[in-house]
Image (cartoon, rainbow, N blue to C red; front, top):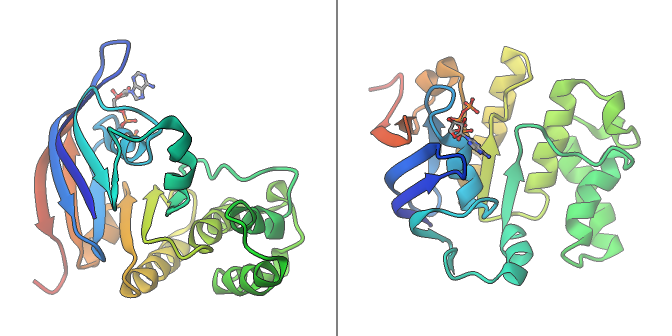
Length: 225
Ligand SMILES: Nc1ncnc2c1ncn2[C@@H]1O[C@H](COP(=O)(O)OP(=O)(O)OP(=O)(O)O)[C@@H](O)[C@H]1O
């Protein structure tokens, strides 16, 4: 469960990025966050992963109250969620396999389970033939899928993705959305920031629109209405 109550974020330079945001996302929901550039979408995600602090308001993610969280708890908290960053943040001197394995290693998984799980997840992403390659040897869309594999590998209860289809062709965008939908069917909460109106229009999901730091609409979208 994700909850923001009256959340405001003003950056040090005076920019009001979020202005009194109230939002509740139940466990197992799939939610798109949309809005023009500069609306505050990335800021919202950064607050949810405690990369930024709110100026005001209360934020809860799963069993955590982010306002009260101690600095040393943050890495543990982040490990409960799968995060796909806009710029992937893959580690350049690690292979694809190692990048995904690393997420398992930091939570103390055994070598045996890593060797079983990582190839499985990479295969799901259609990357089994790239396991020993380095990120800079991959196309943008492939790097995107490595980032997604890394976010999924520990079966998180919440996945947060910032423009997960940003650098890929339309067909691949659909594949990524299909994967996220599949994961969502297994009760994982999925939160996706996207610019791609065509995806949002065709998928029957909850869509939260943000403009100038405020939620301007919150509705179910879909071709079947
Ligand atoms: N670290 C920062 N310091 C100061 N201002 C910032 C910072 N990060 C973002 N902003 C500003 O806050 C506002 C919201 O930015 P944010 O990145 O959340 O928008 P966005 O909706 O994600 O945009 P985009 O779709 O282009 O990624 C913008 O005016 C932006 O310039």
